[in-house]
Image (cartoon, rainbow, N blue to C red):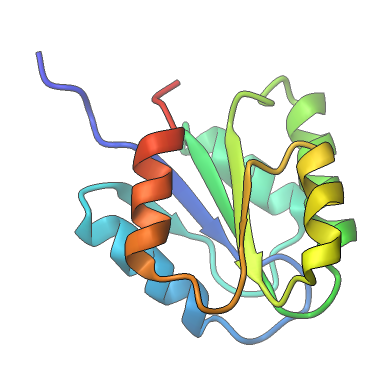
Length: 133
C-alpha cells in the first residue's frame, strides 16, 4: 500500500499583502509531491485553522512579513489546541528576528525559516519533520 502525500496548508495571516515567498514555497512543496492548499492573502488565524482542519492537513506553513508574527503565530497555535488539532505541525517564515525564534519555539512552532532559506531546505525539513496524521 502506498501512502498518500503529505498535506500542507500554506497561509498568509494578517494584513500583509506580500505573498511571493508563500507562493514560491507552496509551489516547491507541490513540486516535491505534496498536496498543498494555499489560502491566499489576509487570512485570519481562525480561517487558517479552519482550512487546516477541513483539509486534513499534516502541517501549516505561515508566512509573515508584517512584524505581527508573535501575535499571529500564537493565535494559530492556541486555536489548533482549542480545536483538538495540536498534532498539526506549524512552521513559518518571513521577516522574523532571530531573537523571536526561541519564543515561537516555546509556543510550539516547529521551525522558523528566515530570509535566505532555500526551497530545498524547506522541502527537506518538511519531509523529515512532518508525518501523516
